[in-house]
Image (cartoon, rainbow, N blue to C red; front, side):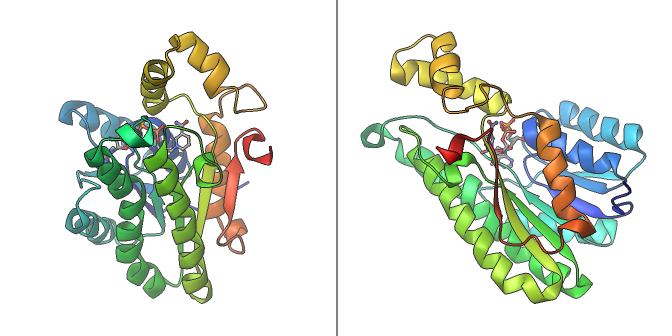
Length: 263
Ligand code: NAD
């Protein structure tokens, strides 16, 4: 099925790694020009940028905006539209995690998680809206989490931020509905990425378990399928949302969690 995405422009925050990198690659495979963003070693990022561009024959740029800095986020959105001529897709994906009981939760980690996992989606959306309204078409997708719908212990900042993203998603959807712009949230269960690998180590510490016990009894215990969600499964939903077929799906908080949040 031709999704008619050739020549579209997507900005994906936190796309130097994990889900963001996989979604950037899936969009590039459909002919979408890409702006990558994220932290990391400059040579590795350049390799990632060049690989996607060469493999898929699309333009791939990189902007190093720090998701804790609103002015840099606005600059990145303007950069995408200026350098690539338009902005069709904004995927607010950057995210971090810190696992600790609330009474011991480091205040700087709370502030950082709220900034990166929630406020950055507001700043990106705020900057993208005038561009998308002027185009009379746009797709904003927030990479939320099952933790936008349910909680887990020791993840206060992450759960609060992701619930906030769900609220932002619904509000943007209502404000943008008559402008050809949609806003939806994808809520994965566990996907094996560096973020989850780090959590296995952190959870092992706070729960006094081995990493294997955390994987079996904590991480996949929540996921009824007992399997990690794959990048392809997330890409399938993302491609639907950003295509013409997704035009009436707006303000939806979409679970891709093997049934976790049905419990
Ligand atoms: P990851 O650690 O592999 O990637 C995170 C990306 O965010 C990286 O590119 C990193 O450089 C970037 N980033 C972090 N801080 C940044 C900052 N200050 N400025 C700019 N970029 C920054 O993680 P992932 O698992 O791919 O997570 C991606 C998104 O998916 C996150 O929002 C996460 O909460 C969400 N998510 C992940 C899972 C999972 O199981 N992996 C499940 C549900 C939701």
